[in-house]
Image (tube, rainbow, N blue to C red; front, side, top):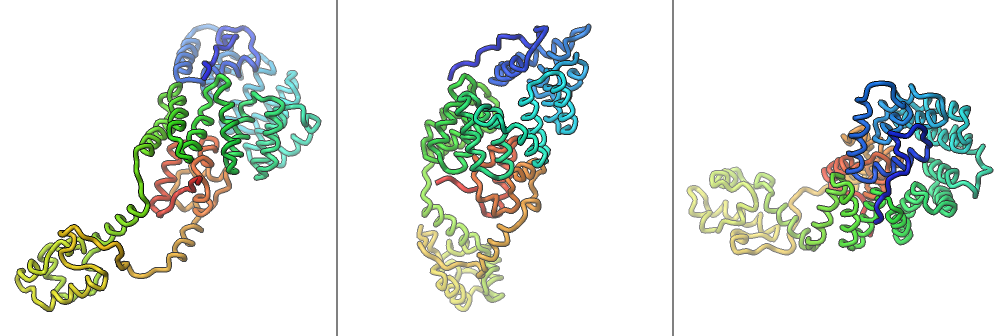
Length: 439
């Protein structure tokens, strides 16, 4: 991967800056933890300086670091300019002040900002706010940019995706990429939707483009790793994760994923063997109290500290009969109970266990139980508000809809991180369920 080059304009020392300067700085600073730490130190030193500051450059620098509330305080003190209001709108959108963001964009337009840039930004604010009708009206005014502007088609693609029209979204992302092959946001969302549709080969092609343009695109690399792991290409998956960790050594998702891939490389798993082991364990741990034995037999077994079927299968007839007050009647009763299930006394001490055994639990209607669980609302699943909000973005309302998704689909949602994924895995595991895996 080509190293990200330092921007031509030093944001903190420049007298005048453009949006292109801010974007270039953002790309460079957030390309690696090392760059980010160094830039954060410089910003901190700038804030400690006495005297009047260049509020626009300091505010934009704070925004690059994701300190949006602090950035807004600085930007509001800056001189009037289109850059001020566009950056202010961006920060306000990030902290959920959507109405204020629209107002700032109106001021940016009056200050001479590009009309298409303003309208696309407005459409994005309305989309994030959930006001899709207002976003549609804004985009309607931009139709003359069809087949001309990559920004317009990317914004329209995000809008269509929010409406659930994935085919239209794919077409718009495709057009945006055709107009501007280096448009990273369009490339990523195009690849991601292709990924969701199961077109893995095409998705990989576009993800790869994002990893060769000089910027270590973390989400693209991790999604590639998922696709490679699903096709048992563990070395390629590990390479992608290592590229992320090279620039972001503390990325939690990458750290956890690397451990998972390394385990997958060395783990041998035979489904039939594991099922057999699970069934045996289940049988051996079944309490004696679950069976209809006489009080006399139960009391004798209890005094002998025989509490489970596993305990009973370790002992021989001779050992049972040797116990005080344990007679032939109790022995016959116990042997009959075991034989009805294909078991016998002392068999595990001989290293033997049958391949097929009768089910010990009472019969239940598993279909009814499964339907009840799958129809359960995710709002009642005990998930955190953050995890629920991420699921809401995918319009996931029930456990059944959740288990139809893959990890890649969930991790593609903005702000959906490893903590939320782990939380969902734990919740589903408690229900005996798991996320869909790509075959």
